[in-house]
Amino acid sequence: MSTVNQALVGIIMGSKSDLPVMQDAVDVLKTLGVPFEVTIVSAHRTPQRMFDYAQDASKRGLKVIIAGAGGAAHLPGMVASITHLPVIGVPVKSSNSIDGWDSVLSILQMPNGIPVATVALNAAKNAGILAAQILGTQDKQIEKNIIAFKADLAEKVIETAEEVEKMNF
Image 1 (cartoon, rainbow, N blue to C red):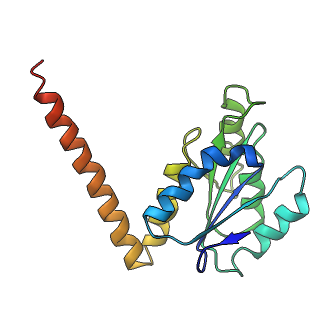
Image 2: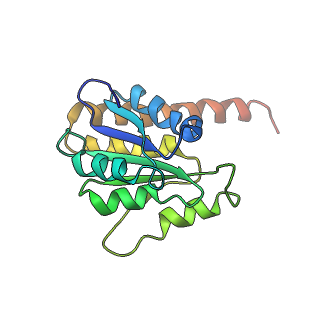
């Protein structure tokens, strides 16, 4: 596991093929100044590694876990069944996916008692933002970073609107 500072967010994925999607969570957490770690934890191929990761996450200082998975996408739900930490699931449209719907439904349709916050297909950036928002409820610097990030988003929309309005449709 690669750790940056004292990681607050764990970013896990079922395989390296998920990394291009999960990179968006990495990038936004860097932008927001949130320390994180990244590793591969397969629910099917390394179940003991998954169990150990989820069970020890809180002891290592993690506060939120982002779990990306494609295909059957059991990783987010299984991790959520083991840990008391919030888990954000990122459904990944993979090569063996049924247009991504299998991943979406596998993460979304959790039984009562085992919640997984689920973002849109391939929306790891939103998972990173949500993790930062959760942390921002207790960390003033992360809260300030989120507020500035959202203000920047709004500013970009206003700039784009002004550009379009100058086109005189």
